[in-house]
Image 1 (cartoon, helix red, strand yellow):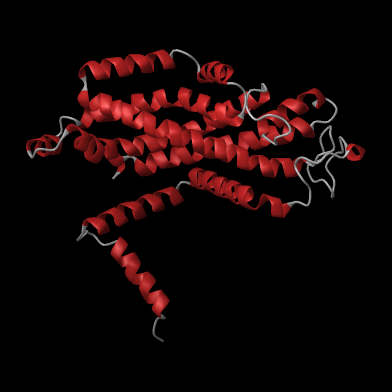
Image 2 (tube, rainbow, N blue to C red):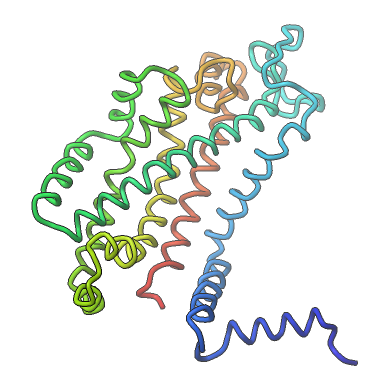
Length: 307
């Protein structure tokens, strides 16, 4: 019996990816990605974190299809109901279904975390790579600015920024991003310092490459894997900071189903109606743990010393 075309194509693709030597740069990149993916699959903790985050994305995308309730509608006739068939996670003090609010709150949590990463990551990468490559006065000024930011705990710094900007999700994202970029810049600078005197950098400079081209095409790609790992590990802190701002009333505003705000509204019922605070608290803990596990796995996958 001959192999089907699909099986044959899969076999040839696997053989191409596992060839002992790459014949093209494209094949080399594909083989590196394939080896990294296999290492990630072999790391059970990282795989568990990845599965949880994929489920979170799916829940955020199809959340409205999983529940017949609205996250905002109130029904005081069913307030403070314990978990049941109609309300699997119970209801809050205004009769709102907690599971529904958790599902909708996943969107807010993911949105805030991704926006912070998209703002803080590029700022830290550009600032750190530029400072590490150029050195001199730019490096001194940039690193002293980073030292000023790092001298304050991230939550305290975010509280200061959001207090100045005002409460709200948008301002909370800006405040968290402003407190999250300095560690990324410090890491990118350390990576840039190790490569700026490399032979291929010197060769590119002799060929007439400008400092901007060297930073963008050579230094920043070297720094990127470490920055991605750091951002992934920082996601847990970002989520906790966003929840902390929501808990203090400086992040998402009621009646938004943000997990930190839900935790704040349920804290007064912890002794009598434990599910109000336990459910959003468990969601925050689970997602933070998943990001930490995935970050540890990415550290093993993207570390060039393991190649």
